[in-house]
Image (cartoon, rainbow, N blue to C red):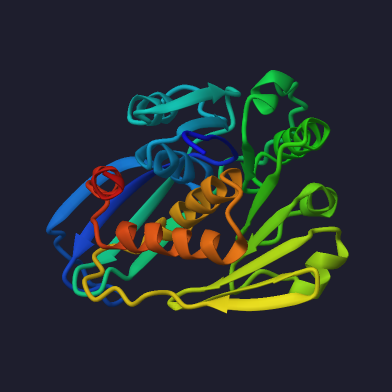
Length: 278
């Protein structure tokens, strides 16, 4: 299968990243060695990764004016469909040079309660729909349309959100963080066939039809920046699902893509991914 289309539905932020030698202690000041501003957020980062990997990335998000215009101008290679006011939020990211560890201070965009008519054609022309649970009514409508069109739905389940009560039964693949509130069995009970869970540098675990497994994360000795690595991982996973890869191959591919992300700083990871995929 050649180029696939991934529709990413959810949050866009503007990330201001400061690189420091060490995290400051309370009351201290620190000089950064580099500073960079770029679009971030689960859906936007996933879309940027999909585009960098040579696939068609479509982003359905809320940008509005102001910071939204700034973010839109930097979403190169991504087909953006703006829902209007409701974002983006501003995130302050501090990255430690020696190991790429980060501290993030952010506030999600205002709760998006608008009922929005999602273009059915936008969903039907996609090979997979990736939702992050933000912009709840939009994620729900996109997932419903995907179900009617036979398009698989992947959920980036980083944290619990009220919309998940209604969204989980519409999801085909739930990729949960280590701290996600529900257990694998509880997610399956909500109707999700394939459940994966990431554990940072630990193996990615999965369960499907009573079969479980784990895929190790390859060590990365030269980590520079871990911010957004999970978002990039979800974008790669969505590509793998669209390509119909078996779960072990899909996870292995997503792990490899995330490893490329963390080897690059905030200002160079998109180009690094593009070079890696050749």
